[in-house]
Amino acid sequence: MTLPDTSAVGAAGRVHALGRFASPAVADALGAALPPPLRDALRPGFEWYACRGAFFHNDAHYGGVLFGAWCAAGPAREIVFSRPALRLPAAPGDWVVFDPFEPHAVLDPGAAIYARERYIGAPASLFIGFELGLTEAVRREFGVAAPAAATPVLSSEVPIHAETGALP
Image (cartoon, rainbow, N blue to C red; front, side, top):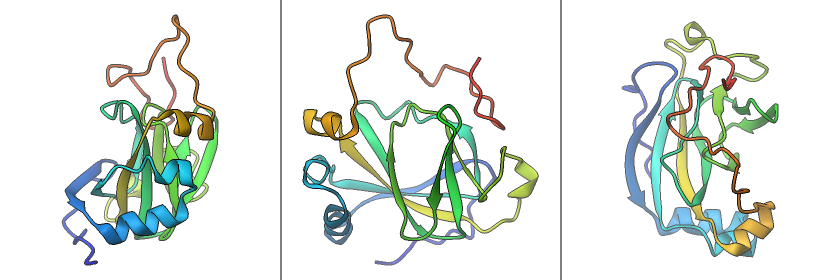
């Protein structure tokens, strides 16, 4: 598979969509890495994403799925989740599955906050984005329960502090 050119990736701090694609080879590779309940929930389409670091944000436009990011190329970085204080490696070959509503960022290893100047002109990280349908099997595998009736849901309307991931 030919990787997309990331040399034209624009502004630091933003995640740039580089196009959707279908690939039996990618589906097979991800399927081999996922346990059966997750493999069965893998949706067939994929998308290329690139960033020169990414400020804290959520991807609330992905409803009814868990989102996956598989790092295909670029420098070692971390996907950082502010609320649970969780840092996951994001170097070529690493993949992560997460709730797209949860605030997250792509930072250099060990970086405490997003600082835009750190990523201006930095090499881009390239990810294959994938989705797992939020089936009952996926819910069981990840321990995802239905939200309680009065639980507030993060949406694209909730302001997220770009540097720290803090919520109001």
